[in-house]
Image (cartoon, rainbow, N blue to C red):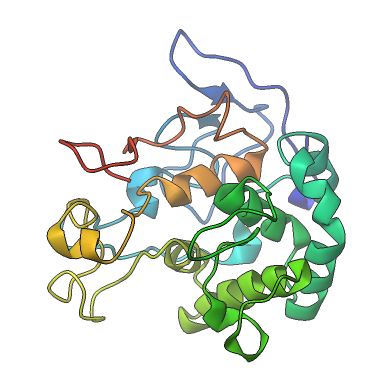
Length: 249
């Protein structure tokens, strides 16, 4: 698979009966990420370890480490469309348009659409469409039936989060999924913690957050892996879709 910066990702293999994917030894790891490994495991990969991406979630509250969007290792657009992102290719014109308008790589937008809606423009819910963002992000703050408006809204939100976090892609992607840092009044004014999604406050704020979200994107979709299919082992929190016992999402 072709990777940005001319990095080549070879065929993945299973390692010793453990769910893992091994990259070509020449791939290397992201020098901007802690805990990065050539082998993709449930809790790590070329773009860092999940413990690092989720810094603080199991302690005092999420304190996202810094990594810029341009630092991420990811497959190129055509490789993505020819593999796990095939369902997104029909919407390429919208990703291209929004990417040009907001100066964001279209493959990033296609990856978000896959994570959020499995690239289904008809996906419903309180945040409908491909990008699953609130109507506040649409032109004039009103949801429309336009696919382009939906992609523009999602891109606008992502860029706003990147800007508000001084260029931190880790914080921006977490925010896209509703993650929050200290000081916003939630969770006793702490950042997101592992026990928050299933707390009474977390439940009152809607569906629990997927605590594997950043790991799934950075070390799953971005590497051309199928997080919702054969590679669903990626991530260590593993929510069952409801709050019962230790199942959190």
